[in-house]
Structures are given as C-alpha cells and as structure tokens.
Length: 90
Image 1 (tube, rainbow, N blue to C red):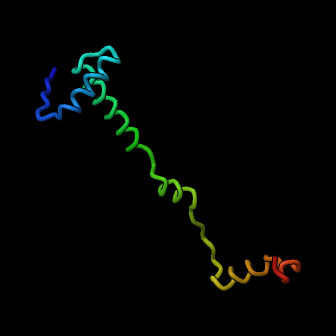
Image 2: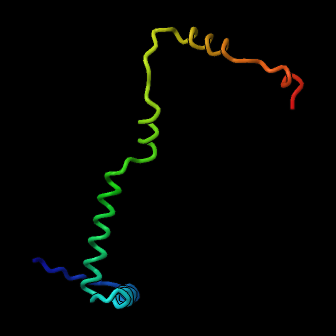
C-alpha cells in the first residue's frame, strides 16, 4: 500500500480537516483518504453525466424532408389561424 505525504498545507486548512476528522471519529489520515475517495467517485460520476447542452441536442434530433424550404414555410403559414379578437390589440 502506498503512502502519501502532503507538504505546505495551510494551518487553517489543516485545523479544519482535523476538526472534521474528530467530528467523524476518524484520524486526519483517515479523513483525508475519505475525502479523496469521495472526490474521485463524484468526479467520475460527473464525467459520465451528459452536459445540459448534450441533453438538449439529443432531444432535438433532426428530420429529413424532401420539400423545399418555401413549401414548408407556406404550409406552416397556412396552418396558422388569425384571431379576430387580436386585430384590435390586447
């Protein structure tokens, strides 16, 4: 099993780590190992998760249509309904 030595740790950070370790009934070494394992597990999970942009792209998809753009636009405009009550505004 390998050993790890951390040099140059800030006193405030060490004291916080020591305090948390005591709250969790662990040694500073055990707490440090716990935090490193937890961080690595979360990081791997996040890397496996799709970004919001990728999810949107997966949902949007695409389609094939042999019609020309003008034909598609014309069909969309024909499908729209004009409401008489909106002619006067809100």
